Image 1: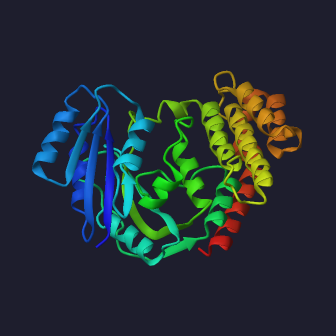
Image 2: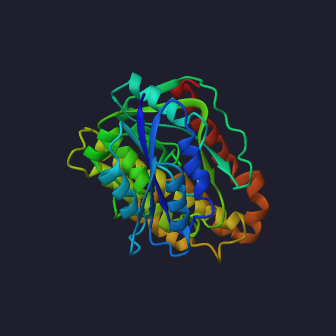
Length: 347
């Protein structure tokens, strides 16, 4: 039977912590342990964690006397405590779906070359009971790590939320944890770092975790700043291409590719500000500055020209015309990209 250690960092989430812990303890056909790390919540969350530990010997609790922040807390559990075959990080306000760990460990038991496994997250508003999840085994796909990594650079965005991932503990501890310099995209960088050296498993057609969506998500305030989001995403990709242990011969081209993708994203966001009548509110100039700093040759990008058209039309006419004219080229491009994706992935 495969063993899995699950780290649950908790900061003032004592009210929902029992759901997360129970979702791990109820996993069938795996030997599980849980470490709850209370990061000096000071609101009674640690008391909840201790009660859970008293009720089940598989639950261990650590309490920080001072707040260490989320990155240090994650790494404490994954790098210092975890010792099972596999490990996972689960936020205190999320939960695993039934059978998630069995499905993930079965794949990695069958494929020792796989460094981590993920599936789909099921977004959840926190209501009780938990919504039904897709749990019937539909098989899996094993991607060559560097092929999977190239897809991340081609799209310029991560495809993983986080609670749906299970990692081989030896890989986690050999290649390291979350980068403290990447407070908001450390997970993206870490998955890509693992993919440099190991294959990636994907569980098809199943929901692996419940991801709670609410106004207090740690990233909610951060992602209100789209420029900061783009800068952190670029920093994650740059961290991968500049690694001394990156064996990819085309890493310079990958760097230029993702810079182009993110610059186009920034210019699209700037254009949408005109479509929505928010050009005087949204950070249009900062988005353009980011695009120029990242890629340089933005005058040759199609999004640059549509942005200039919007500026000439003005916010009022851009907003009126965008559904008919300005978004049509973008729709055709997105459709073409989706077709290419389906062809490459065979779905």
